[in-house]
Image (cartoon, rainbow, N blue to C red; front, side, top):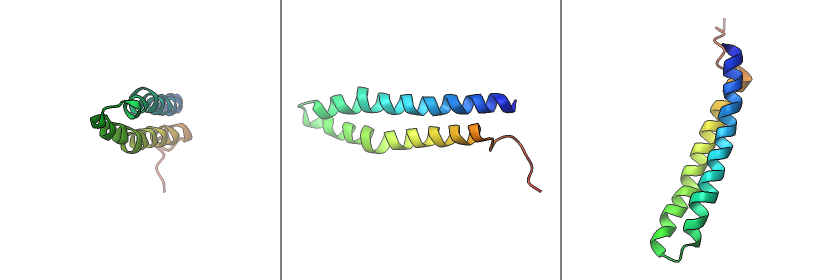
Length: 76
């Protein structure tokens, strides 16, 4: 089970990178380039609020899973 957690950690890290790429490339940049002023607020939210929260959350979770923090060892 611990090996599965380590592999899933790598998958979570990859998912963090994919989510960050998607949010910036597919969501934020087209909204920034839009001539409509009402598109600027969602672009700012995507780029500066949601992307760091999602990428850091998934990345840290994946790192901890990959490094073995969730292996179930009891500290004594």
